[in-house]
Amino acid sequence: MDWGFLSKTGSSRTRDLHLRYYGRPEHLASAAMPSIRSQRVLFPDGVRPGTIRYEKGSIVEISQGVADRDFGDLMILPGLVDTHVHVNEPGRTDWEGFASATRAAAAGGTTTIVDMPLNSIPPTVSVEALNEKLLSTTGKLSVDVAFWGGLIPGSESEISGLVAAGVRGFKAFLVDSGVDEFPPMPLAELAVVSKRLGELGVPLLVHAEEADLLHELVPGARSYLDYLVSRPIESEVSAVASVARLATDGTRVHVLHVSSPDAAAEIQSGPDSLTGETCPHYLTFAAEDIGVGATSFKCAPPIRNRDQREGLWDALGSGALNMVVSDHSPAPADLKEIETGDFARAWGGIGSLQLRLLAVWTGAADRGIPLSELVRWLALEPARLAGLDQSKGSIDVGKDADVVVFDPDAMSVVVGAKLEHRHTLTPYDGMKLRGQVVTTILRGETIYEDGQIEPGLGRTMTT
Image (spheres, rainbow, N blue to C red):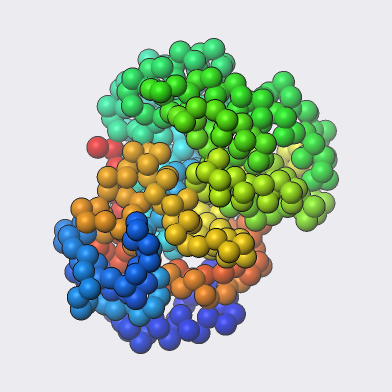
């Protein structure tokens, strides 16, 4: 049995249950059955035994009856939704592409991703660019994929056309994005655009750092502390305060990758239409533990200290932040400056799409947080942000039959070289994480099981 990217360390229970309850499928697609059951199904109102029956990809009945496949006491969770994934295709497919990214999603229990408008070439700032991106997905998708549009100076005229073409909302930067083809939007222009987005019923997503409060990092800097100081908390807090003014009753503004509880507090004190997310790396790592030249940890905003990390867990608990998404943004090792350890030159992005559930569950279990909270953060709230909650994000009659069979008690060691990501460099390499994704089902079809992935069953979501 191939357990993929994980070296098992004491989760033989998962293997035994896997074989005891449903054996080894001859072919993944043939393993899809009209009903599944477990003693522990996470429904919107809590965990209880249940049988889920589905037809033509949708859940049609929830009962206590006998099922075609019984997963014993393994957890059945709704398929996860990740609204912050940089796939980079077309144009930078050597960084990440739809085939590898959606395989990684399937292996990690994510059944729907929403692709960011950068770092593909062209960026998704026009209908023509969206069509080019859609064409590049053909035959490559293992999970369902929706799309964010991008906002750059001069792209405002494309907003209505992109919404009509199916994008779920728009992302903008207040600072340098790192790629020339996606420059930042002046705040005054965003104020005008945000009203239009409110009229169209889609959210504005903002990378919130204040450019004037960032400090230039000297080339050759190998100290993580130097990098941390170059992007201070004050920059994030100031930017959130500025974008809070764009959130009105008619316009939802969502702050991306919040790294500081101070920024989260600024969100909480703002209007109800202002929301924010954080990411697994901010909840897992701490600046004090990042070594000299360890550029695999570089991201923006940066990973902060232990107190800040604990404050983010508190912010999730209080509702100041309402979701955890990956901000998956891998790059080749040379762009990460792995050999030089130069934080000034290294690309800022972390590969974690496949590890989101395990990384967050590891931290949550240590803090006594139940899986029901994780499902809200990792599935339901991201689905709501992207306007996909009519079909995704929870186990309900009428919704897509997207589920994850999960062993929350397994313990595993991450083997970076075995990840499905295009580039397997990750700061999680070698870490012991809690949990194991056993089976992932997309619209009633088994897309991941027994370490195997069934490609080509995903679809684009533009209607």
